[in-house]
Length: 375
Image (cartoon, rainbow, N blue to C red; front, side):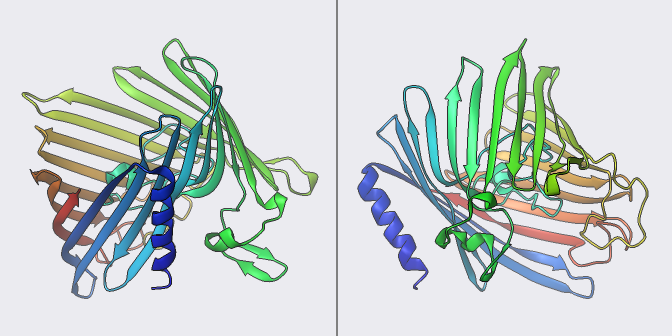
């Protein structure tokens, strides 16, 4: 109860400050069976989200979002709580939120602040905002300044006062999630900046993230030639002890296309890859289930068929070409009433016992069904 009271107080203050508030809520309830290797288990959970957004003032925006993961226990998180103010020459955002840098849906080497999506990420798309929001649930406390430089160009500067990981202080360990009550030394923070422009219809982006022990510059490009395509790259540079040591470069490449498939149907296709050229190109016999031993190449693919506006069939897969293993996820999303979707989902792992994904292990096969309701 003590943890709920601060949330109620925040909602009350939010409403009093901004007057007009748009409230949206989403509940996703799922239940099904999962192969636990030695037996078949039942899994049930509910994911909920409530968002309070200000309206009525075109120069000031604010958002307070509370997420809840509910099974036999309840986990609450204030995933977003920020104010965005537009001045004549620039915009300022202050609070807990997320900025999207670089190009790429699943793999994005240009995401130097949040470091992109991990291989263990949930590709089900069961969060309130679908797959895109589910892959980007991580947020951080930040101060952001956005400066328009023209119709298609802008400069953005972002400061993050709290470190990403747990740190060691004079009084002991301090988890990053508890840093809101702490006064942090200046050199624990991070500073980032980027410049975005467009040339001959191609979006160009470049920037860097600076930390006390190093800097990570990156570059991204995005355009259209039959398909929407993108590419990003980054190179961490270690500045510790006054040295200048380049780390391992990271690259990501992707393509996306959408076509009409007769009537009101739409067929979409996405393929992306992540490349660490200096990593392992040979299969490792000591690989652990679900853990990346440091392979150089991974692929993500997605195929979706939307029949009118009510039924969507989709197939998604994460593939490790080096050990020839894959995680496959498929499902049907059916909008049966306004705001209510009925979902059928199945997932399977393909590979050997020493691969990243494989058969005859926990979670190698799962079947789920449930509802998502937005109101």
